[in-house]
Structures are given as structure tokens and as C-alpha cells.
Length: 284
Image 1 (tube, rainbow, N blue to C red):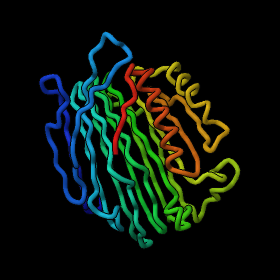
Image 2: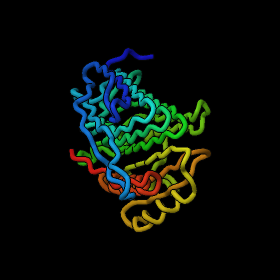
Image 3: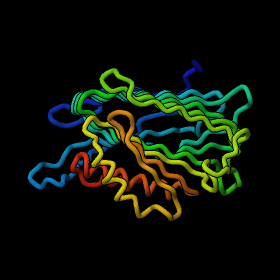
Image 4: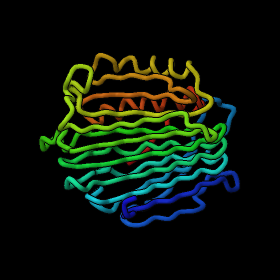
């Protein structure tokens, strides 16, 4: 395992009826910048607003440099509800052939907890190498909503698919059972990314992962109907159920903001259909 160069560890629990940050540790350049409280309105007018804690993470450095290894550990105790994000794009800088950057994220969700993790996009600079891994452990009744947007480089500088390698692994467990595994590897120098059936003319890739034991086919249908207006436009969109307790929305396009708009639409739709909650309005 590479030497740790940045770390965040946070634990959330319900205290006196409110979700609170009960433990935190961060090591520079990563830090928890601030927390703030949401009162989610529900579509059930007889129900009280649902408390949720918002959390901003921050990287005080220019980004992941060659040899950097970041770890982010987040634990939600029973009933905790958290919205987690960061302040800016995650930037991955160039690395020599024998170097690279790594990032490990471990998310643990207790019974009936909710984690909405919507970070800013990942930008891979020319000659960048990144190995990223995310592990999520879900308990009964918990819900995870997680977004992931990949940019091909600094496009205004002509850096399109000039990074060396990007590996992204994601594993999700439910009550100790592995229910989802993704192993994505992109090496532009040896792959024909512009070939038919591959990336073709698109340059950006985004995904919204939703995991809950309350998901059903009707939630997929609601998202598909809501996203149908995006088809045939500037982006390509697809959505499908996973093997168990999961739903994934995938979108491809040429601009990060276009992908974020589509994924935000899907996110707001699943909040409505799965949790009867109004959209979460996030200011940055």
C-alpha cells in the first residue's frame, strides 16, 4: 500500500433526534471544511421535514500529485442522514511511468441510514495515472446515492484522452453479501476510444449509483421516463437495474456540466420516487 498522504475519517450518528458529526479526523491536505443542516421537505404534507446533515470536504493542495495516496472513510450509524460533497474538481497531475496516484474510499452505512455522496468531477491531466477504489457496506434499510463524473483532461488546452491510465473499482456489500462489482480500466494510448460502440465522439462519462433494498422496477421506469427528454440530444443516457438492490444511470457527452445536469435530474427523481423527498438544493 502506498504511503498515506491525505486522509479524512468521519462518523455520523443521531443525537437528540438530529444527525451530528460525532467523530472526525483529517490529515492535510484533505480536511472537512464545514457542516450545515438541511430540513428536507416531503411530498407527504402531513410529515415533518426530514433532518439531514450536509458536509463539505476540501483539498488544500493543487490535487493528486505523483505518488499521492488519499483515503476517505465515512461511517453512518443507525438512522443518520448525510449529504457529502467536495468544493472543487479532483485534479490528477502527471506521473512518471513507475508512479501514479491512488484514492481509496470506504463508506459504511448503518441500519436505515442515508448517504448522498455527490462529488465534483474528476479531471485527469496529461500523463496522469490514477487507481481509484470505492467500497460501500450497506445495512438493512440503508440507502446510498453516489455520483461519478470523469473528464478527459483540460479540454481548453487540448488535453483530450492524453492521460496514461485510469482504473476505477467499486464494490458494494449488503448485509455482508457482495451485490455489485465494477472494474473499469481506461488506457487511451492502447484503446480505440473513438471506435463505434465505444466512446465515439463523446469525451466525458458520468454515472449515478443508487443502492437500497427498497428499489424496484417502478423506480427505474420513473427515472427512464424523466430522462427520456435527454435522448437524442447532446448526451447519451442509459439506466438499468443491477443484480440486487441497485440501479445505475450512465450518461456520456462532451461537457461535464451537461452530465451533471442529467445526473442531478435522476438524483432528484429518485429522491421523490424512493424517499418522497423534494430536491436537495446545494449552493457552492
